[in-house]
Amino acid sequence: MMRLGVAPAALSPAEGARPLDGALRLADRVLSFGAASHLRACLLLLAVGLASFLPGFASLQPMDRDEPRFAQASKQMLETGDLVDIRFQAEARHKKPVGIYWAQAAAVAAGEALGVPQARMQIGLYRIPSLLGALAAILLTYWASLALLDRRRALLAAALFGACIMLSAEARLAKTDALLTACSVAAFGALARAWLGRARLERRRGPASLGTALVFWLGIALGILVKGPMVPLFAGLAALVLAVREGSARWLLDLRPRLGLLITLAVVAPWFLAIAWKSGGAFFGEAVGRDMLGKVGTGAEKHWGPPGAYALAFFATFWPGAAFASLAIPFAWARRREEAVALLLTWIVPMWLIFEAVPTKLPHYVLPLMPAVAILTVLALSRGALDPRRPGARWVASLVVLIPVGLTLGLSVAVWRLDHVLPLAALPLLLAACILAGLAWAAFARGEREGAGQGGGEAALVLAIAASVVLSGAVFGLTQPVLQSLKVSPRLAAIRDALPCVAPRVASLGLREPSLVFTVGTDLAMLNSGAEAIAFLREGGCRLVLVEDRFAAEFASAQGGPLPAAAGRVTGFNINGGKPVGVSAYAALPGPTP
Image 1: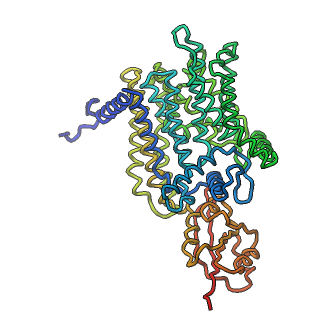
Image 2 (image 1 turned 90 degrees about the horizontal axis):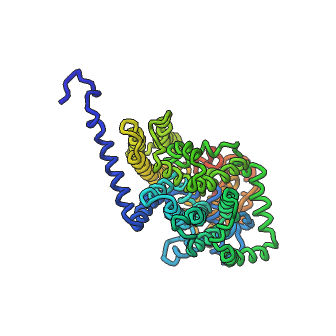
Image 3 (image 1 turned 90 degrees about the vertical axis):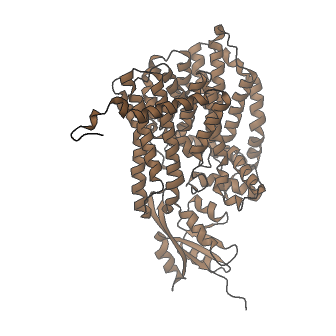
């Protein structure tokens, strides 16, 4: 029993460190369990991925604007049976190749076959390819890491990448980027084996196998089908830099380029030829001329950012590994001529500089580079380079605490301001994530007393990964469903569903978000004036018109008399425009049969 007048500091260091000691032992046991075999490692990585990605997977509303554009185009493929042309309502969507649309349409078709109610309206089904792509990216990062690290550290690197915020977000969005990342890391892992096979012949490590070459070219081919030239650009630029460094490109012959060309043509040529014929070449003009080159020349779709924007955003997008990755930079620079470090830097640095130079900035663009960042971070750790005794190291590592603390405070304020409630169910997990992040920092900082060892650094990364998994459940699983103000389109669709008639025609005046098209239906009419809205209601049958507040006066003026009774009203917050939004719904119901 503590006597009065004795300060808490009188506790022995051992007593004060007991919670941290337990966390360190548990972290070591988890890593040791996973590193016992490749099967255990893969199962543990899948568990980390599923625990991070599944909370809120189906309940998160379609996120404007890109996600519902992809999902709606995939839905229209199922509606029309046209698997070549890509359309959003009547508009040709010639921006990305067909790979993601085929994958999403297949997932929804499987859902229909399994009896999922209203499968084509379930956004979660359209997200399944992204979920599978994110899980594949984690496992492929483990495979790529094994070319450079032992099993224990390869497991740690893959888990660190799997826990990053950006991958967690992309796994929940029906877009291209999770699948693109899986294709990219497959190509990187194969390229790494070809390069290191050249560099280690004296150690009796043979050239890349046929299987490795097949992984490389399938990654390239599927990457082209998902997002055009991006994966060839990642791999080609890295290969070019390595060839210049070596003074020869002969080592690339291990990847069987002639076989690879045949594989690539077999995978991508049929659809590209079909869309070229069907669109009269318009697809290539739109995809290359307007979409890709437009982003290079200007800040497309208001996504401009200055050089250095990705470096600043990195501390959030690659959390929880960003703080530790930044500590690995001096190691990477000092060892840049080593084979393994040079390989990782050629994957990261050239493309990162290109992304920083391009005016259009979107956080997910650098996601395919993050597996290499995770591997480099763990490689630095394995060499003792993440030393807490270095000047400023503990301060940099403390950044791992900022994201969970900031989200705990920020989400509480946001939920209260938008919906006048508090995320009480999520608060215990939010606080647990803060505590785990704090323990991660303490595990790293403890090395200052005990000497720079890998054990404390490994435990710090494991605890940071655990913090990310818990935070994902808190944010997406428990806080997101409370934010009803963000679910404007699903709430408007619910008004349509509550009408006492079958298959009503719906039109929107003002609100044009793609999520509204996805949730209401392909035949949603987009109106331009109050007069058009009144005319639409008067055309007969069961009809519903949605009028955004900024058009309310024009709509009332066009009516020329008392407005019809409102069928419902939705207020909320448009995350795409960053502004409050209000929409009133007016219905015209068919009269009784005489």
